[in-house]
View (cartoon, rainbow, N blue to C red):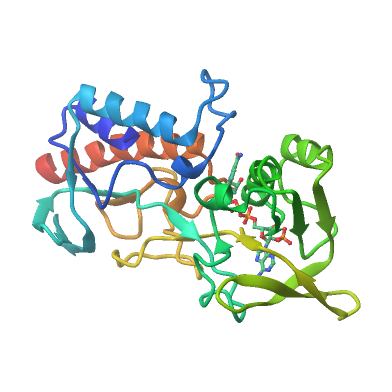
Length: 290
Ligand code: NAP
């Protein structure tokens, strides 16, 4: 949305292609409290504001599922389920999805006790016991949401120290119904129709424990949605850019969670979008007039 706003305001003929609805990962956040100027807002509400702002600026948003971006010298061709679009520059801002844990039972019990989103699925666990896997901002944010719904939340983390920011850590340590299980990983998720237990492994002692549980919420990082574009990426698939947000292919830029960066936040995605749009304008000017 930010790239769209900056591109339109810079006089570019701009089209934003969106697969579903303008929302993204942040729309699953119950509270966003670190976006300057807006002390507290739900992720969905924040994204609605972005969308309205973009539309009011004149950004044209169309629904289309992009399967490939092809660079044909100065022309870029974007292939979608709604046909092909041509542009001089493309900004990839396709975000990321939660990573899978990759243990037996995870796929089998997806939506049957395994979840990646407390805001979406938490309400099904009223008065029940759940575990949260991971120690980052996502894990602790969602452990806090779950602690207001479930009777008990166990945070299972592979180390004895959290990665999450200190504000979140303090809140979680202060919650009476959140218990931390340190130095431990989930080895298997089991059940009949629904999840009813997990096998935990202490990584220091190798001791295995079976634990009865009603739900497993997994937050072990994010995986970028970048398969549609053939540019230089990290081993994990994040697009490598320079500080102008340009990828290894001239005229293809990247912004937000799909880009290799040190921080995946709304505020940094917004910054990336602005830089990418201005850089795209510079690129287009050079292609047209050099
Ligand atoms: P993350 O920061 O990469 O944290 C992933 C966590 O999962 C880490 O604690 C990691 O352990 C653990 N982990 C990774 N692989 C694992 C495995 N195979 N088994 C067990 N544990 C594993 O991911 P995230 O929490 O989803 O956050 C992603 C980005 O979004 C971050 O930049 C974060 O700051 C941002 N975010 C921000 C907010 C906020 O500002 N409120 C909220 C949500 C997300 P180790 O610590 O040992 O590596």
